[in-house]
Image (cartoon, rainbow, N blue to C red):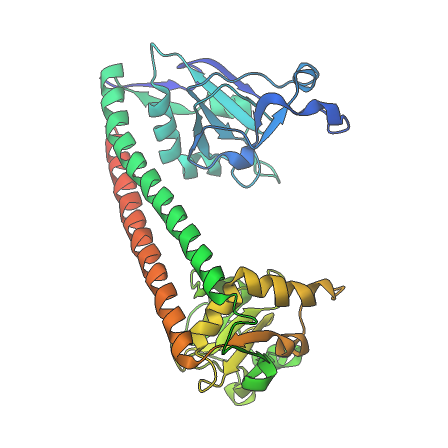
Amino acid sequence: MVEWKTIDDISKNVFAGGTPSTKHEEYYDGDIPWIRSGEIDFNTITKAERNITKEGYNNSSAKLIRSGSVVMAMTGATVAKSAIVEFETSANQSVCAIETDESVANYKYVYFYLSKEYFKIKSSAQGALTSLNLSMIKQIEIPVPSLEEQTRIVGILDTFTSAIDNLKEQIAQRRKQYEYYRDQLLDLEGKPGVEMKTIGDFGDVTKLAGFEFTEHVIYKEEGKIIALRGLNVRNGNLDLSQIKYIDGSNFEKLGRSKLLINDMLFTYVGTIGNVALINEDDKYYLAPNVSRIRFDCNVIIPRFALYVFMSEYFHRTQINKFLNSSSMKNLSMENIRKFKLPLPPLSEQQRIVSILDTFEASIQNLEAQLKEREKQYEYYRNKLLTFE
């Protein structure tokens, strides 16, 4: 037997937090945990990013949230997302706390159901800031089977979330190892057999001029030829989740921005320093705010260059050096041509690439496992929490 009840019906307390006045420094960095809506992301929260003092707590509307409660973001980028808190904490006014009545509802069961209904709840948010209020959250309806059935469902879904958390931890550890070895292997300046040369000595750097874009480029939602923008260049790879096609453009006038295999993209404005390699001919062209670097492959292996550009050494010694000298916080093509890269022999470049490729492949394998496990979790969550 499943009854439908509101959040208010199954809870001992539903309330919002509060924020101590930021004019008082003495209200912050104390001993009382204080979470904010941005920390809520379908997760288990075990510590707060900020703390407040007893004085700040007493001089605000902040309240303590018991361990084993559900929290939901009421506004901001995470509006309608929920999380579990596994420690006593307070929160700001953009966080709603749901302290369930244990005789009626398992708090984890409530969390799983609210996460399943995220898009529906978010669509009910109102106003220019897309926000929820306490009254709206209290009236959310939830199916309430027996506590025994709730516990059974929570046990199954906990198994999935535990596996997901384990994979995320493995990925984080493997990525940390990869970044450590990458930075060690590529800190080559001054090493025997390593030349330092500017990109202008062995590479061609260009971008799409503003007039070329306005006069010759036509964006479309469908097609075959893709214009690569800054948002398509992420962490050494092409991100094609949001793309624009330019099949109707005047390609006779856009020869300079046509991209070929092994061309490297570099974002020089906005989020500066992202890179990716082109892996296919006759498919991509430059969009504004992204530069193209075409290397002499007799001097440098493009994938070696990619890893150099991603290293802490390169950001510290090259990108940041030129950025700090720019009032506009962007990089000109002239500055990019002045970047100095370490050039060991091609055989050593290939050895380094092989090592780092192995790390990349292992991370990608774990990420594929994570995506599959997340799909399984969503499938079973939706199946288990759908009642006739």
